[in-house]
Length: 321
View 1 (cartoon, rainbow, N blue to C red):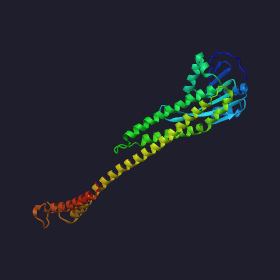
View 2: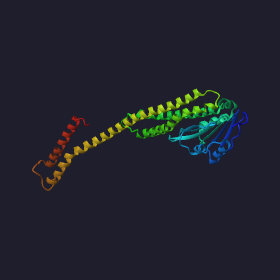
View 3: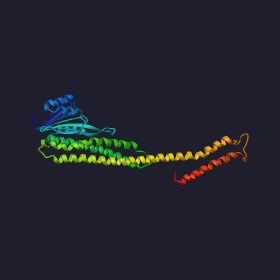
View 4: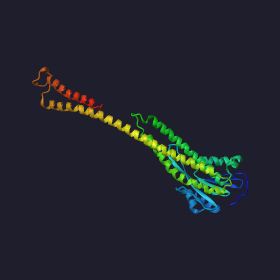
């Protein structure tokens, strides 16, 4: 589709903005609606299924339709609570145009769009071809992956600093980090799988972009490898936290069991004493009178103390405490 050559950018209209540099036109739609996609279908002849995917597509894809290449990619985004969610970006690349559709909060793309709109120098350096613009957008979004990974790494460092302390539990931060890594891995897997197909758009660029495509693939692959390493590290932390938590529980149960066991002789003898032997100071006394009315009490107390001391000696010799 030919467009009039110009180096000026048009003014945005609602969520749709168009920028023209030379023979290339960049049309961007933030938070696209059905009406927006219908307009694209009318003006560019894009397939209805591709336009529908721009609104609700969950499957990453790169498709070559001859006169244009359609990209549907998902990139991770982290909200204020540290939850990682996928953010969809759709692109139509043609010989003299690029159309991007995305959610309105995609900061890297919006910043690039604003710089091209406001600076002729930026327009000239970025809008060389539709393929190069797509590369720059994807590269900026891939850079956001490393920001999230840095945040996860900070959490792992915090966990490592205390996970070997047997007095503290790290179950909550470990589970949160595992959730982040699981979401990242789920988003990056199809991206790593389909991103090499971006080379199909080389036909729209007179410049050889092979090295740029290779750099993107390397970054995504390295991110996936980092995620795998972090997952393995988290498994170590999880096992360590489980062992230390089990030790804390076992130690507590051991102390309680020992205390309960030590009271068994006292409970038994005190029951016998209370049922079958006259109480000291009562109306009658037993045959033991060496300490007056408290003779029976002293004998029973000694009988309770001896097995308790024997058990304490045995438990310490067995290494139970």
